[in-house]
Length: 117
Image (cartoon, rainbow, N blue to C red; front, side, top):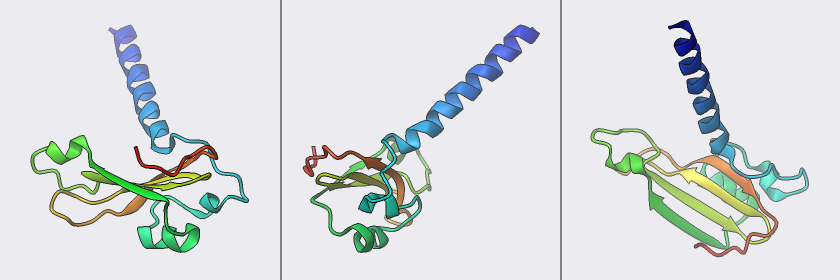
């Protein structure tokens, strides 16, 4: 019984840590990159002010949009693509059109094409 409990707790911790690691999936930008100024929780306006307008922008619903009575701010995501720099991902609000629009991921990639898929 104790062995099973330990195994379950270790598995749960590993799964939780893996989920946290996925929030920042890319490489950290070097200090001289404009993306280094972007921090988690910043608004779209702040990012545009610091980095400039993106080369492309893309949005999509997340699976959370289909959860009944989900009122969180991660039902929609928007990604800004910066050519030669990488991308910035925003949690862009709930299904009712409110909240969100804050940075949840900065993915530094000097090979970024700047074109949304």
